[in-house]
Length: 165
Image 1: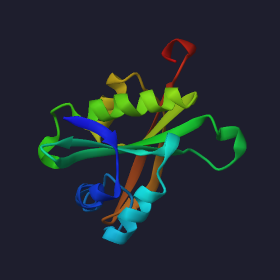
Image 2 (image 1 turned 180 degrees about the horizontal axis):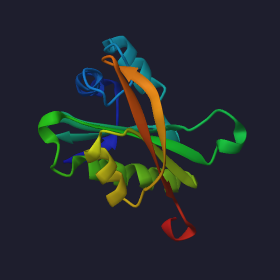
Image 3 (image 1 turned 60 degrees about the vertical axis):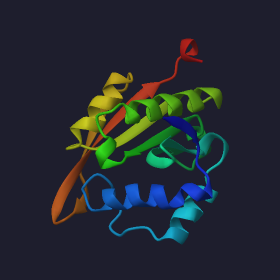
């Protein structure tokens, strides 16, 4: 499996993975992305906020990205991660490879803190982040509503210490 920065040619594969997640509680989007929207998302990703894809046999099997945590300048050393793995590839280490790559990107760009905001029912993602050194720092109660259900969000954090850099 190859990990690399996403390009526009990866848009259909990323879109398929993301849109499958839209049909679940694991993303708070309520409607699927169009191909144009997915391409625009990729075009906005560069440098520290680039999207990374996991490619196996010329197919995108997962993707991940870092995003700005908040707009205000004092938050500039904190980022938020997102990781999505194609359903038939889950449990094969794709998510861990993507997360490890994101942490490397965060270190290389001088970030101090990485935040993961995960639907509290997503035990696999919580376990993935815990295994990568993230700690649960809180639960946001009923902050999302999807499929007529209130959803909690687990907030997890990994500090990138000087020894990590």
